[in-house]
Length: 438
Ligand code: XLS
Ligand code: NI
Ligand code: NI
Image 1 (cartoon, rainbow, N blue to C red):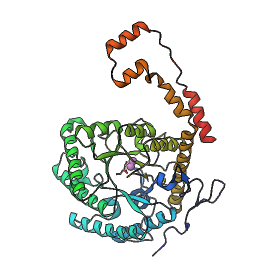
Image 2 (image 1 turned 180 degrees about the vertical axis):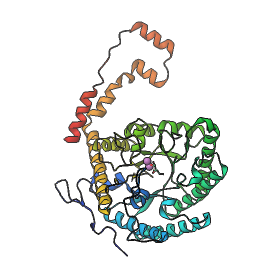
Image 3 (image 1 turned 30 degrees about the vertical axis):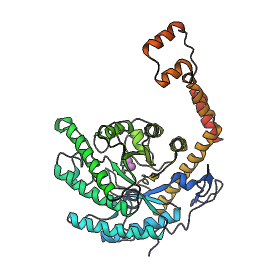
Image 4 (image 1 turned 90 degrees about the vertical axis):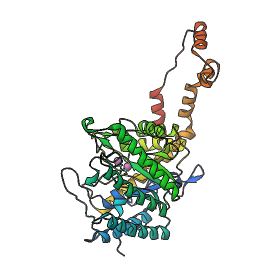
């Protein structure tokens, strides 16, 4: 079998002094942090589509990255080579999970039954690889946005035939997820949104989307899927108005249709920023609603307004993200999927290795710093104190729900001088810098 990443044997932790580009500077998989090895805190996953399929094309130019895996022509041979390359890559980097869309792993055939045959052949091959290694599926999904049949959406399409096709794909993707032992199944909105209300029945589209999700839950539970379903919020792109705008919008949808017991959120950093939020905002909204599930770890470019899916390198952002993960009690079924691709000019296999090492080190540092913030205690202590007026007296009554407008007016009549305290934002930002740069 060919070796696709000959430049690396096994990428090991060598510490921050190391100048070896093929070593981890901060990610020390077995290092125990708060009773758990780093690898269990972080649960890194490879994204099949970006890592093994994306060719670097953009609206202005064709691909720059050769994905023929040594000049192969037959799409099925390429699909097998992707499995080999993917497992070689994950083994060498110590990545224990992967995520895929049905369309990433096997080529479409001339009709659905051929597509299905190709898909299952590769699923079986992936399964044999998971059995040989310690590498597992984090989540599966179906690509219901690329083909022309989804030009008006899939679950929200105006065309019932498109809806049915999506359902058929999801059925197979769910079965594959179960077969590969995956504990997550993602719905990313894809083209579930609209361009103009002039041709759109929004109410019907949303009802239908919920029906597709309900069918998926019913079928998934029937075939033994005991993991989490996720919605991955994203505000725009490809459509102008994506229905799953952000965490808060998605939570409203899930509750309206009674899907909140089975669904959690898969939060992607770049989607958060496209929605005008910070990554940590989206994670907090998910956490406080018991809907934190999994993460697509990437980043956008602050100067560009689209989903650039870059590898994460911002330690500030990774730290504040990991703080939220810790507050949520850590990952259960979810993990950190690098939904990120190398830039178009970084077209060699070596570049993918650099990208993952850098992304993994960024999150390792984020984890270390997040624990330091907790141990340091200054920030948590400040927040606790900031709300201490709710611990007794009138504050306690408000909190417990025993206060009323009458009782509060009574209180104010006797105490109308309100004493305020500073929010100390600049002080807290300095504390954060102090911990991050120690
Ligand atoms: C696209 C999404 C996609 C999902 C999986 O913007 O991030 O890659 O993660 O369908
Ligand atoms: Ni994503
Ligand atoms: Ni994305």
